[in-house]
Length: 116
Image (cartoon, rainbow, N blue to C red; front, side, top):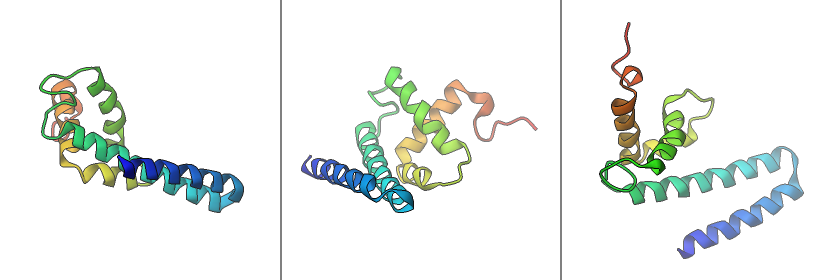
């Protein structure tokens, strides 16, 4: 918990530096802060989900729909930068979650089921 508090404080300090720096340097700093925050969020989601098939247990809920709405495109849509995709792929349980939701609710567009 203390680590997260320190990171939030550091992120706030860096955000203030970005406002002062401006320009390309400011954008790079902000990108780094956002990347760290994304890594923390993905780690927390992975830990919360653990080995469960869904976020809150054995049955899907609204939170799973929201989680899929964020993770699905980040894993499946080609993007110019794959840094966030790489973060998610480092957590097999999150990848498995997206794959399972795709297979269960979107079987026609799941990998390996495309029609030629």
